[in-house]
Image 1 (tube, rainbow, N blue to C red):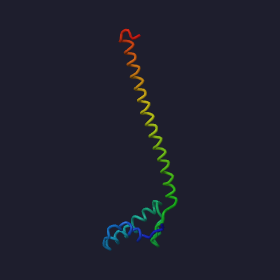
Image 2: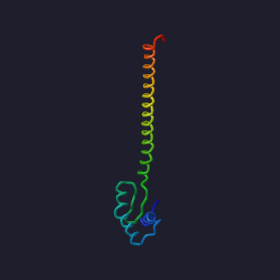
Image 3: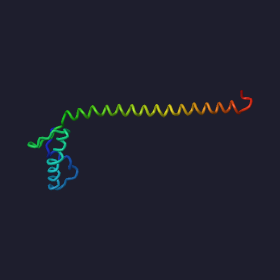
Image 4: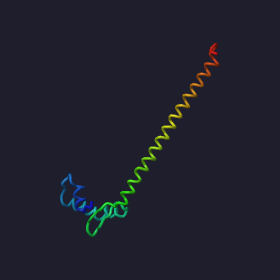
Amino acid sequence: MPATVDEIADTLIEPRRPSIETWASVHERLYEERLPALDESEAIEFDETQGIVERNSNYSNKKRLLFPAALVLLSISVLLAFVAVVSAHMLLAATITFVTSSFAVWFVPGLV
């Protein structure tokens, strides 16, 4: 970064080696549609007069801050789900132990 629209078009179609018409079509679409739209969303800074594209540092910092926050929220959710599952299993085990012990005490003669 910074990069020109030509460099971006070259990178996008690099593995193929298309005709010059195809390259021109990709270049035109980038210049007229895609890059201005990304500039409006503040993901990049696009200078149409010079054909130069730069990263928007504010946008990058926002994304960097959102990823850890999302990761923390996901981790807490997984932890709470794990605690709920373990608690349910412990409750089920305690209930089964109580029922079988009660059954043995009440219905099996001579156990007490």
